[in-house]
Image (tube, rainbow, N blue to C red):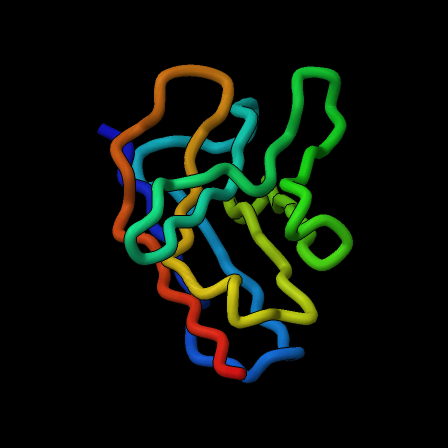
Length: 115
C-alpha cells in the first residue's frame, strides 16, 4: 500500500515563497507521472500542476508563472516551488499520481497565505 507524505507547508505573507515536498512510503515515484493538487475550504480538490504524457508540464492558470513542479528521483521526492504566494493560494496541498487510479491520499500540507 502506498503512503503519500506531503510536507513543507506553513503560514506565509503574501508575496512569500514555500517549497512543498512529497514522497511515498512503499513506492518508487520514478516512472509515475505525478501532480500536485490543492483543496481550499469549502471547495473541491483541484489539480494545479502535473507532468503530461509527452513529458511537458501543465499548470492551472492561476498558478502558472508562480509555481514550479520538479522531482528528484534519487531522493524519491516531488516538489512544488511556490513563489509570489497570494491569499487565494490558501489550501491544503496534496500530491498523487496522474497517470492512473489515484493512490490513497496523504494528509496533505496546509498552506496559509496572509494578506
